Image 1 (tube, rainbow, N blue to C red):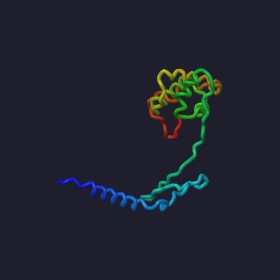
Image 2 (cartoon, helix red, strand yellow):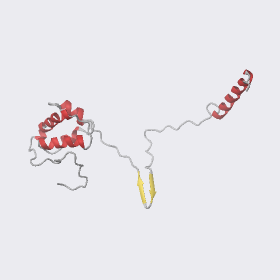
Image 3 (cartoon, rainbow, N blue to C red):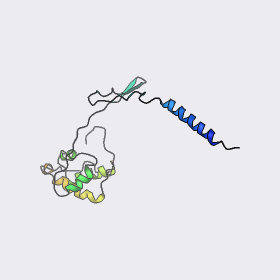
Image 4 (cartoon, helix red, strand yellow):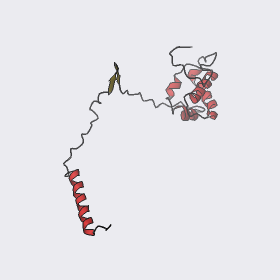
Length: 160
């Protein structure tokens, strides 16, 4: 097979450039994208229907809770471990629990929910939680709420 001449390659390159420019169009011939203003309402929720059911997608705005655990012994440990999954106010508003109940709760977070809590940090976290002023009122007595931390949480809505 004979190699094409430089003139034929130049004509081919020019032809290919012309085809590309024609397909792109003239400058400023395209519509500019419409800017979405921050005041425009959000698009309606998407939905899908089938078999007598309609599933609709909606969005909710979650509250912002940037609170950290108050200063105290092991506050750095609890802030580093616990706030990666939930807010500090989640634990700060819990009813008074005993040290065994807090340990069962922290162990459950680690083993059931796969919270990235190091085994060496559990004691420090429990000490911090039991030392909170809200926990000193009247710590709960009796069995821990989840004696087996590997057990799946009860989602039935039942108590006990």
